[in-house]
Image (cartoon, rainbow, N blue to C red; front, side, top):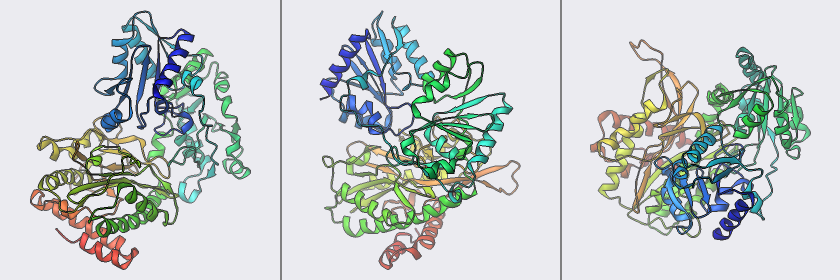
Length: 588
């Protein structure tokens, strides 16, 4: 099937005079999650990861993704068709400069690449003696004969009790900033930013309550919202108010043509097509950050209260699940799919639950070493005695978004497993206890979680922590804790704390809690400082902790956390689970 699709694409390229095609994972909204109608990379190559890009030439092709998907990339793509490459170590633009022939034209869809991505490929094509051109239509869509219809999930109000600030107040605040910078308008091309600004939620992509739409915010606080009218009812129209001009989604490109002589802020993450249309029609484009990004990341009091409440309810499901694992799975026979289904069933009983926040990563034994493993009936593996089980999961609640990872010993763990787990735990504890001056970035904190592993000659090939939204995306920027985390952390930002270790074909270990950035008082301190409040409450697996490897401070930290878990969660779970929880949180 893949061969036939590649053949059809190559024929379309030939018909248009092109030598190659760039196909990213992203759709026109440049988000992590895309609906089936826009999952072009998966349709073309078979690769289903959440980040990647492919370049198809007439005689060769390659697929690129990051370290989270190294194993998955090779498993899901055909080696006789595609080369597979690490997108950081061997990026797609370098491959283009090495493989595009002189005089050849490489084509792309300007709605699917950002301006910086276009520039990289333009430079790469020029280095090869070729050129880059925007195609008159998306050539994958042209040959995708059974392409699903675009989603039309209903859009609903996100009530003030949960949002904490009226949309009109948000619009006025952001518009004043635009006016202060002598800007006439700002494009909003990230659906989570539009949802946050208008206090609405949708369901156009799996597990993230997004209404796929664009918006233009004016310096007068008026908004043009480009959205499929079939998703709206009278209630939503009344909710957003008459300062929001609702227009058909397909009118967005035409609306950009009307900004002749105007100064327009375009997010760096916007599709290149927006810049190209604006500039072609005489607008002055200012490239910058999405104006909703930082305000959305700084959770207000209502959003923080919602996050705490959602995490406490989520902890009930996690405790019931961990008890179930200890009573049902320890003898073997339970599979990854059964475990994942059981956890989801417990979550669905919780008040305010709307959906999972992402497909549960349920990895037993060697499958746990695949960082973003997704279990299927074909890959489903039993949780066998003497192995580790990694489960990374989360819930979307109307008042908050959760994300937690625990690694569980099935049967007796080996000394190697206990040593690796304890090294990961030490990094996790070090980051959660961090105190730092305002202005510190995620990159500066990242080494705290890696230091114990580094000292043992180990590391992990993913970020330590990502930002998390408020009943929005489980992966939110600009905040993150990673080697590339350039945003300064600010009060109200929620992030994950999830170091790990992965031994290919053997086991995977990851420990994840969500943490809230908050001001802290330091006795004798001379600078305003920040620290973290842990939002997630679930026991670490004591069977995997080698206490001899922990300092007295780390032991006290684990014991204090476990005491909190017992006190907060114990009263809300069945008696048998509470009894198990008492043992699971007993002092080291």
